[in-house]
Image (cartoon, rainbow, N blue to C red):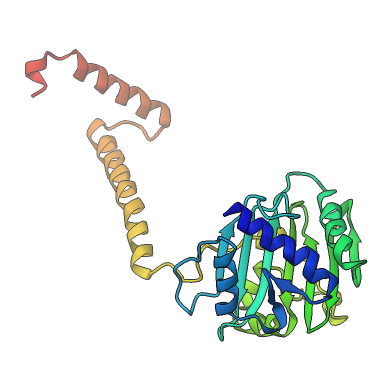
Length: 265
């Protein structure tokens, strides 16, 4: 599997980059669909998750195997409701390493040249570097803050717009939505806040019966504890102070353990 993944990604970065046609495992992003992308990933050695057509994403753990992408831990591929490819996002985890984003930008720049636009300070705060490619495609390397993890997105721009409308909450978490700031008025994309830098494991909500079951599991022991405390206070007739409760409880337990075994029955 590792050899297949490495060969496929190496072809993406060497052969395709020189032709200025952005592709994903050999599939041109401007014409990519779920079927063609899944077929390419299968040839590369990935195991396609068993998901229905209503699911909007597939997630793969790659652990840095693909060539030229050392440090990447996860690949998330997102599709529109019509099955068009929208975003492929690589995650490069980082713990307090603000220079990581510079390394990822340099890696992309080596094959695609200088970015079309950049914003932010690599040493501190959010950073965005964009490469606009032919066919309405784009590469985006970005980092939020204070998390220093870096993300690299391969996008079909038109499909991303459709994806953003269909799944607004998901688009925000993936860093594909415009913020409610002055920068949005200028059409400048900015990374989402750190609380949104997560990819859900599923796009289906928790069933209501599960929520009720969870509430019941925790509420029943809580009620038992309250009733036992009330019973203990009534039987022992002690003042409502923690010190008195502890003293009486320990005293009752000591008396019980001092009894012979035949009296405990």
